[in-house]
Length: 247
Image 1 (cartoon, rainbow, N blue to C red):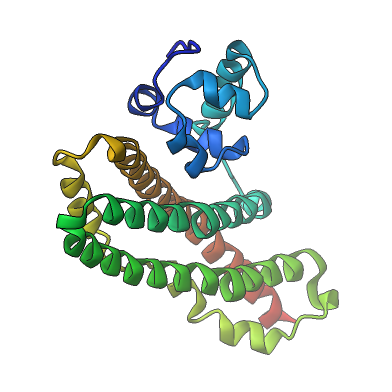
Image 2 (image 1 turned 30 degrees about the vertical axis):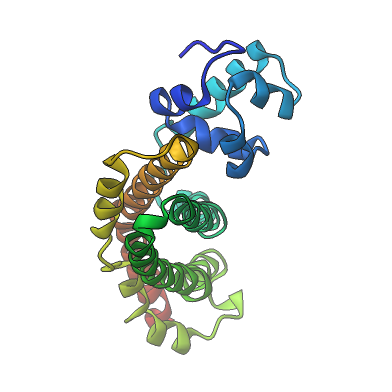
């Protein structure tokens, strides 16, 4: 999409949904995006001309879609860093931003506020479950994998409690299974299809794209964990545990 100073921000978000996430990375929060009518106003916020803003969006947007490869056990560290970065994005950006936008929609729609309040409650339960899942992975699963890597590299001289490591391995990988139902996100999007007062059009557009981004990110994240992380952890466990038992 070619940008011009008078390009409507709603049009930008409709045609290039990833632009919102890119603008967040450039330091433009959702609140500022919502207040802007044109791309020229956003360019002023980040102190870039339109050509520079276009180049930055194209570059960061393209990087977001690059295919990832973490072949072999040696790529495990890079994979954990990638997953940890996505955890941070979900917890500190996507979930709080959706909460704020849903509150804004409730404020704009007094006659429908009870509907938005109910949807907000459903999302709060989902947010709590997803956050707990992420934090357990960060606090329990990822350190366990790092211990496996340490033992694989340094052997018995790693200082790891081998018996505890063996006991931990039986259950921790079950953390990769996220069963929380997110189908209610479809209910939110259906609610967004209905007409809206003019002053909430931008909020509506932004919320729709934030939900799309969250859904896309969590699906890609789950695929990375299921298709790449889990098989590599199982191979790593097999190698390390054979070595420990032989010792």
